Length: 191
Image (cartoon, rainbow, N blue to C red; front, side, top):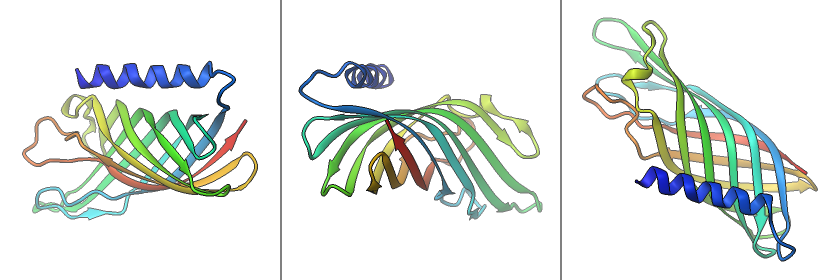
């Protein structure tokens, strides 16, 4: 039920950005970013720094000069790398998601902004480096929180840090929990 409500809210926010009235301005953006996973140890295995990246479209709808509704449609790639298990094997997982972030952005000044909200991710692929396709062993959805802080150094360009924290255990069958978490630097071109 929560997933359906979240998707309906995302569609409504996206459509309000697309068909905004004269009362507020809106813009679209092409954005992309790269960073690293911030996941914790998984059972007896210790985590390693692992790459993440995203690319996609963003939408901003200005409620007033200080507050925007933000939404997007992104392709997210996440990697989770772990050290050796007791048998000497290293584990590494990669995931691909279509992600819909929906939230608010507070423009503290003309240049600086902070924001946050929720995201929903639909799992497209899940792979383990030696075992191959493991999509059936992982959940089909990832839901979590994101927090942004950034600057708009020149018109039409934004640079921001995005922290994401997943609420959903992305593993279905193994005994230990695995949740996604990442920090990335992103650049957006607004038009």
